[in-house]
Amino acid sequence: MPSEPAAPHTPTTLPSAAGPSNGPAALPTEFPFTLPRGYVDGKGNVHREGVMRLATARDELIPLKDQRVQENPAYLSVVLLGRLITRLGTLTDIHAGVVEEMFAADLAFLQRFYEKINTDGSALASTVCPNCRHEFQVDMGSRLGE
Image (cartoon, one colour):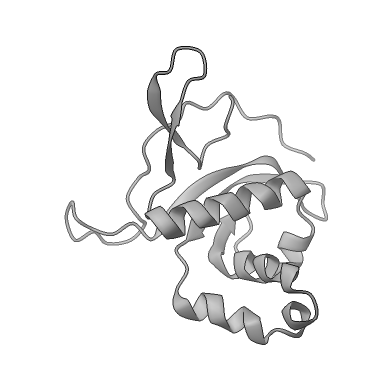
């Protein structure tokens, strides 16, 4: 049974990474996100809330040996995201096959989210209101526009 649409979400700052904390300077390694559409599993359940961990050098190198990536370099992001998403709704076994079945809007969101957390170490993006020119931050882990 598909889940109901989520209530509007107010962007917040990201919580620290799961697991033991070494005080306020602990490095966040996992980041929550909400997919714009949601992954629909074989039973019709919609999974939108998830967690992605930071990539390591190994995470970025291992998919290059994958035959699917060698035949089609565009497949790299599918394999890579399948390694880095640690939870999606109630699912904990996330792999390239799951990512393959996602809607294009969700894949594009995850690619941007991956880039943001792995270059800045944060899912917060600075932006400017086009009307009043006020600068503010948006949590890319939330559903933008709600």
